[in-house]
Length: 206
Image (cartoon, rainbow, N blue to C red):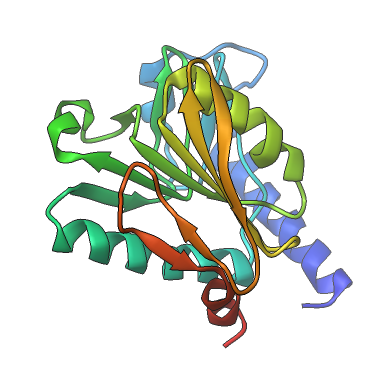
């Protein structure tokens, strides 16, 4: 998609959101009930009473999500470990704060955190870094997910072609590993779950 077409697409995307949410004033703080009652299936997040909508996803982004979700879901189902979901499904970090990670996993013993319209504190979150808002995944969400007590956070960076696996130590994340081309990313939470980094990018280029 050339720059002109891309700009036109983004303009239409945001205009459609504005039209759908025309009855919602972002100058007014919303309740959680109003957030879940929004008349839209768009990817809309909720933070401190206000609505946030991320930029539209790309083909590379969705290819990475699809590849990683297949791998994780196959491992989880094969070992009967829990449940895997893909975005955009709300995760409640704390009261009044919801994010919609790209991929989330919850252990079977924590099924009580599952609700029909949202999950509380997943055990593992995977985010594909957005080229238009890199700091959101690399910095903001790293802080938020640590504060929420999410044990393991994978940051998949198409621009750097790396996968960083972060493990919660106390109130902050420590880097278990930053894995690049030709390497295999590994999980601490799920021993035996491995991802060939090069295959993730290959899947996005098919």
